[in-house]
Image (cartoon, rainbow, N blue to C red):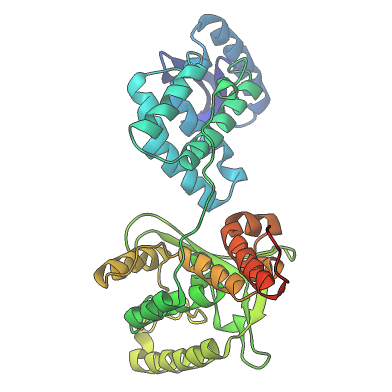
Length: 390
């Protein structure tokens, strides 16, 4: 579509606002209908259609002449309502910081974009910026989706991203801590604001959002269970900054919504933590923040601990105490690895972690499963009769 036109009210009369792209830049023109707003909606719509046709004939520059980087951001705003808020934030950060600057510097329009432009971008990111193949594949997913929309809306004839050669995805192997490393970690985080998130993530393999989203109502001290019923996400950068959003899952079949046994040592820890929080409420009095009163991971004054604070301070504490560098999310891998090492089945680990299917669990922890097979082979050799090689 070359030109778009909308009706707008201005000073009591209908105006037509025309939009089109010329030389990669968005253009806008106001045209007065002279029609009062009251009682003239149908006439104004007819005039809008007439003016639109007139300007479609006049303007030869195509809407598709938009610069590719600007098109990507416009596409993102179009799909914003159909994707999760955290997904939108991730896409926007990726496009704004990594993809758009490259194409903006080269002033490539949507209709000029060819497969080799995209291929050159991927090669540049891999060789010059040193990003991983997995990251390039994430770039490609967004670029291809956006261009597919352009094809669907007849802005371009075919999707150039379909002709690009993609790098092979590296097999993921999560980092993890041993029992001794976890013991030392528990010692150095004791008394800090990230102590509770670390303990819960290590014991249960909870994701960071799940840990911060845990409430006291999720703990059943009578039946000895702990449940994941929601999650906390955060938009924005920096320690403690950004919008915190609490979300409760509604779908009953969501694999992330799960109930697990309350490990005795964790039960004792949580009982002690509850007593401490009750004392803090009395001490702070009316200044205690009650918005997150039911949440487990709160500061002394009742404020919810932001996810960014946990992840960033986790890295700082590891560096300060000379502990091996891992991500906070790797506590989840540590939990799974230790479970598998103790003979827990892959299926049970899948349920424990809240993976949607066992294939996900098996792909991530195949290296651990193979180690258990080696141990089985050694045990088999110990009991089987010797074979005469001669």
